[in-house]
Image (cartoon, rainbow, N blue to C red):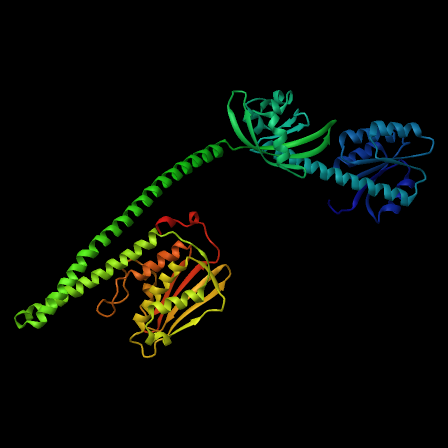
Length: 512
């Protein structure tokens, strides 16, 4: 509401009363004076007036007659009548014709009249603000691109904008003669839907399906607001409606696409799993079938090497025999690694809580030679439990300890540390060595099948060991990574979930 001085027009035919009024109120208000009704009407036409205070008994035009004309020409101006005790009929006339806010008697009480004038001004300002807001609402209501309808508790249409008329394909008059529910596909469902979507006085995002006068079905989304009682109607609601037909159709299209995609993914996944299982079976069969002839080649080449070593005539055959024997033994090692790798695929996990310290000690006894056990230390808290398949975790430690022993054998003071710590819901296992290490840019490649970080003539191996480690960890639902630097050793980090994870939640767990 604006903060401004009251502009009051005082009308009286007696000069003394005009001067007295100005003297009494000029400090608090802007006072304008008129000595007759016609003169006051001229001032009203030129000046902005908030409140009129008029005497009743004036020659030519009485106060009630003047106020009736002022009401017709300037309805926003507040009107008050000043009269004597005996002019009751004049007051009644002023109320009926002039629509006065209040009246005061002569002689006036300055404080009482000042209070009444200020109250009239406040009401005038509030009415002006109300009219301004109503105009704004009316503009928004009419020009809104979204359909808006105002209904009572029976669904009777009280008001509707042009957008709603266009949506339903009918006129405003026709809509206001009926009920909005007549245009709904399922009006009975609306009540329960409104209850489900109620938030205070609002009903948010209520699904509607309307049928237009031409029979077209339109999907809509409605937000309704309870306005209370209005114009003799018990309960009044305003509903803003959005046509979401295109969005619904797009959602149906996307849903169908997603369903089709899910089907295709399921088929492709099934085919991939079947292919991977066949490949695993094929690899196992090939590796197993190769082992026997390779052992024969190795045995025969060893016999040839022994015979050639004792017969001068066969000396030139000796290097060939040694090369054949060495190559066949490397092939046997590779086949054995492939068989172990395949076994990690087919074996089902049997997880249980076990002492990690016991598994680590057992793996060290299996892999680490007696003379090198002093180079291996444990950083494991006593009583630390891990939820794992113990034999498979032992295979992991076998491979990691074997690599650590291999890559530290040229180190002056070899050191291998097996550690464990609980981080939240994860058991972290580490195997750290101070061996030759490898280029850190190859960290991500270390766990690939047949990936070697060093030349074969420098360090033996097939590149399968870390691939086995990765597969076993993956089957547990864990993760493994390597950190290394040339000449500074390597650390392998294994993170295993402390609780059992369903195989269904691990992608391709069946073939991992």
